[in-house]
Image (cartoon, rainbow, N blue to C red; front, side, top):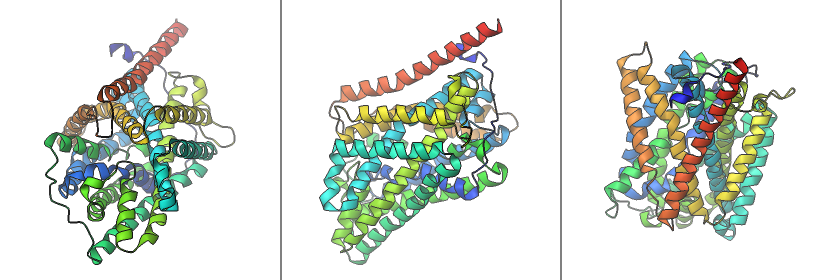
Length: 462
């Protein structure tokens, strides 16, 4: 990595409108963190899964919150984690961290879009629920939503933020309706009696799921990628993080309990797990009317999450375009809408290609798992940097360094467990090959681009 230390001129602040207030930040963080599609595959252990969510909150969210609060105060500006790592290590390491943060979202956004399409398949009841496994429907719906959120975000964050805000409200309401379905089932005596620990589960599977739970809390750093677009970060970031953290923890714990009450452990699906739980439980309890509203609200929630990650992660290539580490065109700002329109357009096209390719030659469930696992590994690379930066940062207390150490251990373990193939995978060898290629190729492309930019910069100086 020594070659990544070559300096490339950097810009820390950009002239963009300050459009994000405190409530915008709260909703952005909630929609980025609370993805209850993580619950069905992690609820298979029984009621102990609720305890594991609480432990994951302590092991990852708390260290991450400390790191975000400390580093965003030390290094305010556009770019977030890309800016922080660049300041603490070097231009090259900052670029690699930012590159991984961005490219992982080129995998993750298709994951979210595929899941969203599966959720909306339930909006029409039993007649449309089978569309969750229809690749034509899933692909068409996912690409249509990608185009919509790209156009609205290109119109500027003042317009685009409303997708995230609506998604945040949809997240809260969908969680509430899932809990209502479980309460009805309990009231009518038809709730499932889940064991404390499912006897069929093993320790390795539980450890792998625990790492997924930890990674589910990633997202509170997302708003900081738009640091120059926050009206008052010193006043609003801290309460937004605390509020989103409390909502996320409560949502994961309570919805896990609700899912276990509505569906037998052995019948939980990966893509359609939440909707399966609501559908089954609501029908049994005589409240089938809940199915459509939950599907619509969850679909809006997932769509808002996709837009949040799309808009936030795009600020990395935008700022990198300003530093000449990536093509300068990515750093252009629209003259009227004041948005990074070129970076947003490029990200939309690449995410669309990945969405299409993920559905070729794979079932929807397998495509979902490959995209999810590859995106997790790439996304964790910047967090290794983040927690090391917190540990080495001057002027911080021992509590911050301890939080950095805990976060670092959790992150490294999470990377290792991400390579374990899930049950939905038909060929383990093909899954591992896709994982290795999906992780190495984007990373090596980033190293190549930075080296090329560094060589060009050095030649210009000479």
